[in-house]
Length: 272
Image 1 (cartoon, rainbow, N blue to C red):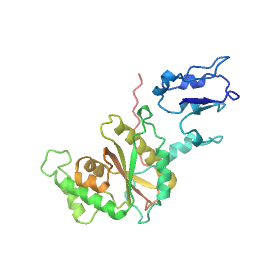
Image 2 (cartoon, rainbow, N blue to C red):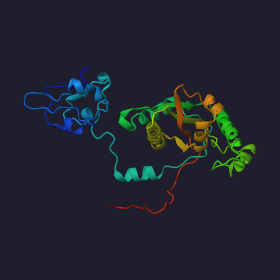
Image 3 (cartoon, rainbow, N blue to C red):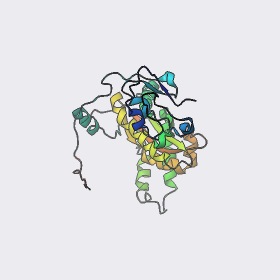
Image 4 (cartoon, one colour):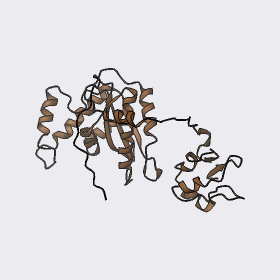
């Protein structure tokens, strides 16, 4: 299969596609030829699409589902530095939610953004499990508490304060999922050494994008730890065969609005 499709009427032979090719596969154009990926190198292409999106004349098309090509409107995605500063600094870990469910369609919109997160070698190994039923979220929280009980008296770093969490849970306080109606679990293939990082990057995309859709999030560290070790919880989540949980995030409609930005430690930078 031809790796790239080039419109000879639009191609200006500028050489940008060759320069930005991640794998250095594209032979540059000259007066007589168009940019080209030699057949012998075609299987090295990681289908990242750099060649296509950096083409100023839109002459080049990566031959990867070409019928799904998306036009990029002028100034699409442009945001001022000031707006970016306030948007990101306003981001909070939400631990109080309304009982209203986030529509599945809205969740899919945010996950579709996370689909574009960077991955090592453009492997795109991350898949998602969305626990949408609040009753099941509550069960996941309970199974996480069960896992914590197995750590009492052990050398686990959490063992010292686990009794406090368990006591609070038994008094009716959801210290695990904080009453969130939904849980998101990023799953990755077993045995993939870089996929864990890919999953964290993708989940960060979800975390950052969610407030723009009115969704509040909080990284679910207790659930994430338990899901990597506790088989009853793994079964309840329904992680597909051959995959494992990389991390978890609780989310829902925030109960309260944000009216300010708290302080943080001073910026520390070492220049070399």
